[in-house]
Length: 396
Length: 114
Image 1 (cartoon, rainbow over the protein chains, first blue to last red):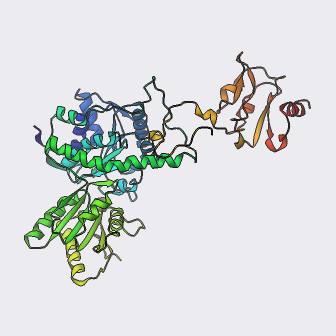
Image 2: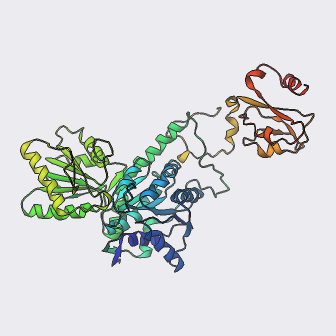
Image 3: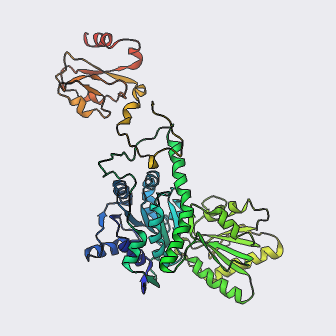
């Protein structure tokens, strides 16, 4: 049996890494994910794991070391945030292009400038098209559970694609929550032994990684890579079920919270979903048919499944913890809106930016979103397609 | 390239390559603007050109001696000429447009007999 512990999201990630005990962790410290490699270093020093910890001089080097170690045939993990993730950028594509199932914990954080170390999704949303699987966690329990599942998903023979499991910087990374820490051997049994497909260190079967693909080869390789990423959708679902069988906590591609008869629906990712659930509960007590669609898997984006869940909604609000940065809306909004386009009777969809750079998002703000949805249904009119939550000054 | 072009669902995962050394079948000589021309009469066989050539395009005979340039792969970077320590230099760069249609012997004669 697992046991209840009161620890931070970063400690949850570090414990997951300790139990997975990968061959190599290469990492560089950056707030708010620093305590992850710091705790891993402590676990190694205390003899609780025997991972080779490679301390590098930058995140570019961290991901490069991960690529080398993974190509060599090792099980490899790392952790980062914000500008560190951004500095990994070109190597993230190399990891996914080389089909190396590296697993990364991301304590999601705002990108500079202006300089800000607090939580939002600027980092992971900026890297959403790097070819990595992206799982987003609501709380410390999910940060722990998702990191463990990410290993099995990434290493699946039909997937072989790197995966990140993100959780909100500070909201989750530095908040102490009560969550269930499973037994070491049960986690080890769940993730199993890693069998690399084409390890460089297998000198009996020499192989080249990272070679050039000219114009008459590159396209085929990229589509082969996409196929692996798309395969991850079904594997995320099946690993989520297996995880439920092993530990009692089921996972799917999304969580539909009070969605069965929901008319007013918020779609969101990350820690804001906890606040939203509280608001949904109190609205339901007052007879308002409110619901939450929490997206867990952002890449590959399960557009069909999500649009099915939203089919009965009367109005939908998508919350993005980033600036739309010149697009019609935030990345979750444009994905959801695009997914709904093929429905004959699609609900109106609006978008909010919230929580940028650690800005607080409270029940009063979530309530205002449901109020807007009710107004849209009552009047049949959308006053603002895009707005901001808890921003000083009216937007637009 | 001589090998069969494969479909997207046939290529090896991660663009890995199981037949090492296949860059030999990819000829890069056409990229060249200038070519190095070798003068065996003044060459001291120091092998600096072989050491420094970034494309393994210095030909070596069975006795381990410099025996010419692999023009199928040489990209014409000129590093061999820079490194050549003999006096006069035993390698020199010529514009491809100036040597078009001429044999190696003819080129050598023109350049090194001056």
